[in-house]
Length: 197
Image 1: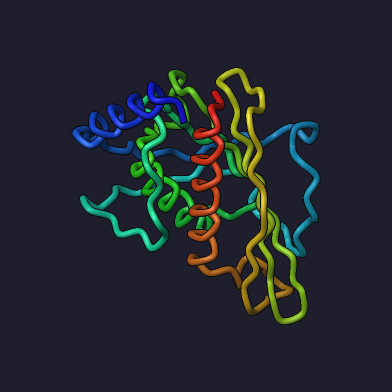
Image 2: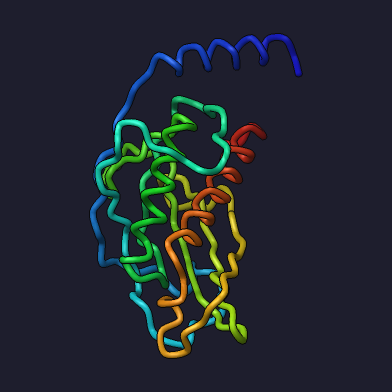
């Protein structure tokens, strides 16, 4: 690493340690993604809510996060949610809460879904598949610029024991959504450290 980059990074960490910000509460939107822009995912066995923007409840003063915290990325990131496709609102809540907590550790400001000053937009797509006695959540997060152009894609899956053919989401615990949030924010931080916009 070049000495200038290292010095800049250390200076940024010192400045960021002195900062203290709060996350605004995000609202719910009824908009849905155009079929042409949504990635092809397997359809869940039962219908789910078409699109919701996560509602993040107020955060405690000192949140405890089980996953290792990632160093601050940059002070300039202001991220807003686009509607999440395929997941019911009660499952989006633990996901959005965890992403908001992880964003704080990375010095990313989560702004209201209507905030037009955001530098990045996070848009998620979800599907659940039953596989015998297990269920798998398949997820895709697109990181968009304010104009809607995709900058980066994060995707993966989380498998849990238990299934419910009548309601596949009923078998998915909050801990699975929190694990997805941790993986998503770790990937986002790695992408940012790679020097992306």
